[in-house]
Image: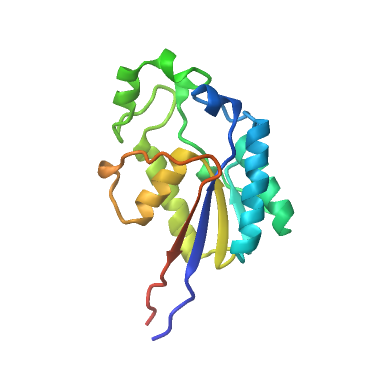
Length: 190
């Protein structure tokens, strides 16, 4: 029986944006704030010292790509855009303040199967992220990867990798530029 090497995934949430500070549902084109740029540079320095990543995959949303660019420059790695790492599509809420949407509506949207008008449910994100992760396990571009994503998508990915079903999903708060590392053991091959 032979085994393949482990797969190490370093999930990184993007740096802070003006929308994060305002508690606003964001659109894909929101850039990092000055604080977010500093966070991205700091996490890049940390990853340089703590990883041996061979590739960076990032959500194609501006804030994730800007964070990935800081990491890629520091580590000397190119960035591959990966739409599967996008944040949940908040549909009709995009661009609106949390306070304007209201706690009752936001509570309803926490239900994993509640799809936001013109957007996604957490179950939709789970399926998208799970399919991506299954593909990575089968054919990773490197044995150690940095995945730059968003708080919700990262929370879903960690939930999925823990083997939990979407029905048990509760969003885990993650700081901007938080790093979570998961080492996936290989499945034995016959």
